[in-house]
Picture 1 (cartoon, rainbow, N blue to C red):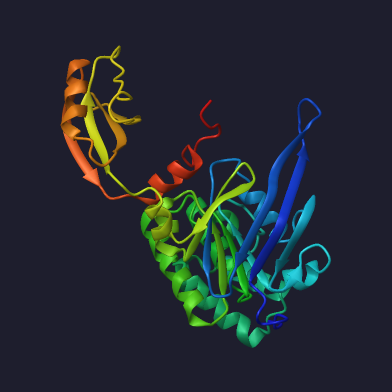
Picture 2 (picture 1 turned 135 degrees about the vertical axis):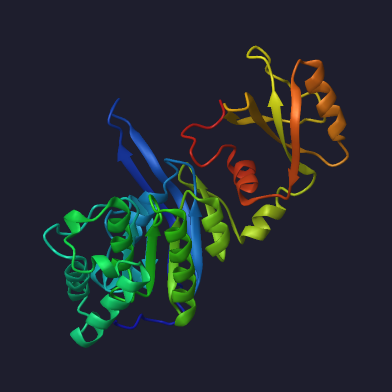
Length: 337
């Protein structure tokens, strides 16, 4: 790997980064990034969280030289992504969840070797590294299997390994565990953390729809929505922004026509969670402000014809902080009207 210029330069830095697209309907413009300012230090695992359509993938594509920005500036490993794209590409790796890259007639081992050669990794280093990565992603039995015969999960693990074959300075992980089973995702998260700590300066930028993944891995997290960064801090600091009161989940049995209204109780705003068809109940989630007694909520629900069959309270989660900052969840396309 070539060394990066100016060791004091951050791993990633954007200033007023903008990107607009021409709308497919109506002839107008869609603003994907609206002036993003981010600084990621070397050695960080940095998370980028946002709802669908928030601008995460657009930002990743610009930083990996796959897309030009409309305005602003972006530098990776000290190099400008527009003026010095070749230098950027020599120092980065990219893993995108769900992608189907690779040549079906090649085996897993051959494909990883090929990508190592794209980056100019010497053979004496490439082959041992390829075999090590095959073991890390648990594909030893499939090492000599053609890619077109792999399952979706196996192919995704191979793609994950491919991101590490060049030992990049900055690794971009865009939904890297998408479609993986729980055990495989847990194992690869541990590998990401150990890989970053093994050598000073290795940096990861992670986008994910799994809050627990971001909470476990990331030193800092930027929350982005509608192309703007709304908050950027460590997960504990983000949680502290919305602490106060209890987070309550009730398992409620109610008639179809019963839609409990809790707004009159100390400004409580509740949201329905997933139904439990086997029990005929649904989950009702809300944050109870300090000093507001839970018994008042229970009495109001009972007065409206709902029966509470289970109560649980918990600490503030990263998801709570995300919803408080953004106003909607990760999977939501539209915010509140």
